Amino acid sequence: MIHPIDYRYGSAEMKKIFDEDNRLQLLLDVEAALALAHADLGHIPSEAADEISSKAILGIVGKEEIYEEERKTNHDIMAMVKVLASKCGDWGRYVHFGATSNDINDTASALQFRDAIEIVMDRITELKGVLARLARDNIDLVCVGRTHAQHAIPTTYGMKFALFLDELKRNEERMVISYERNCGKMAGAVGTMASYDDGMELAEKVGDILNVNMAAITNQVVPRDIYAEILTNIALLGSLLDKMATEVRNLQRTEIDEAAEGFKKTQVGSSTMPHKKNPITSEKTCGLARVLYGNVIPAMLDNVLWHERDLTNSAPERAIIPESFILLDEMLMGMINVYGSLVLFPENIKRNLYMSKGKNMAEAIMIALTKKGASRQDAHEILRTISMSGDDFRMAVKNSSEIKRYLEDPEIETLLVPERYIGEARRLVERVLEDV
Image (cartoon, rainbow, N blue to C red; front, top):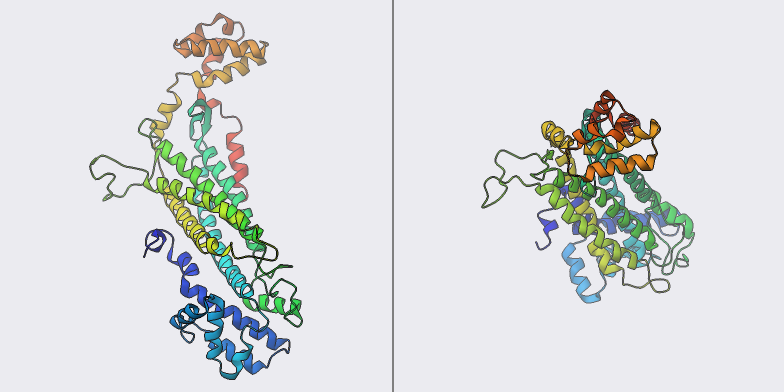
């Protein structure tokens, strides 16, 4: 084992999709489907298709035999074809009939994409449930909002969670598009289907047998904008998970201390500092996101191939496709765990809400002054001057003759209560929750 994916990241079910044994079996499945489709259209004897499909099983077709043949041919698909054909007796002459290597390769990749995206969709559904629960449970938990990392005006934790949920729904829509756009091909060396009789019907039958869409038109390969879109959508989903993890990391800062990852009783935060409780899963998520972002670049470059195809896409795809899906899987599981066991500290949330002694209510007072007849610009300057003075904001507002021209003391007191200045927050959260 060399890559950390082998032993550290991703679920067993996701890794199985990209395991070499599974990949070889999928290639054999495509060869079997091609033979069955040929037979169904009367191109080859049904006995040939039955023999090929019965022998297209890894184990009957030995993995080491394929590797040995590849050492001779220096061609992975031809090696597999020759070994499979050798197992089928006289019917072996119909193995790979009319196909080019990427008819087999790209259709096998489509099967991997299909299965991997299904796992991603299941994880998204689970994470949606976690975020929906948090948004409902904390719909009225008021906290200070922060812009530019500085105190702004009040918001709610319901808003925080609903924002993540709404973005997750958009990512779900993108994944559905990727799932629907995913396709294989059975179109021959340059996409014209010249090597096949009834090529369009043949491709459709192969797709039906394998339960995967087939491309409308290709050259030698499935157009790589489809792959680039999938990897871009993976990175976009990764950026949401990165954002969610970053929020936890910031809220878990000692100086803020409003939220924290769950921490097991036996967990260790530092080998030298016994007191440490670090947001390690969130940090890992942020780190893995960087890899997802980086993998988008080769995916884009892979879309630019010479004429009807060259091989420059092949090597990067062997790395970036399994890596992106497996790391995304790890990140999704991590955020399901972090947000599923997230600890909130209401007392600290309230402490921070009141920390600025009313400064975070300057906008509310400015709006009230404007409604009472003051110039909005004059009101802004009054509140800006008080805020920058260094004086106790609450007392300065109450003692300001300019403010008291328009507002009575009880009105000022009400305006200084942050819980009263959350606008439509509850209704906005409820709107996001309606279809979850």
